[in-house]
Image (cartoon, rainbow, N blue to C red; front, side):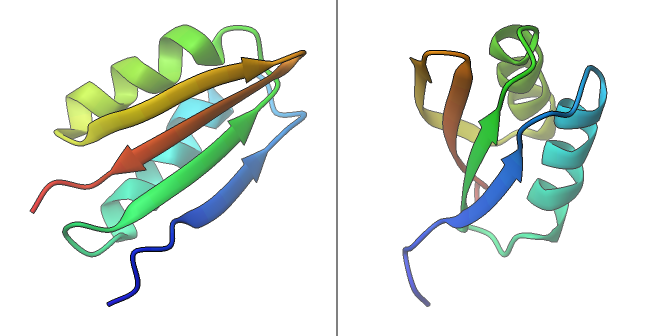
Length: 77
């Protein structure tokens, strides 16, 4: 299995869509799979980490670059 994350670009979507689509993508990942999410919604910095915790996944990295938020998430085994 490749360790390369799956990219999910949710730029332009407004709350609650980035969190909902992140949850859906996490549920479809194989255990140990990684997801790299990009969002522009200002609430994503709060909503995505919360959704990740609720799904039992691990937030490996979070960064902000201008208006974009990027998250690296790993689904737990």
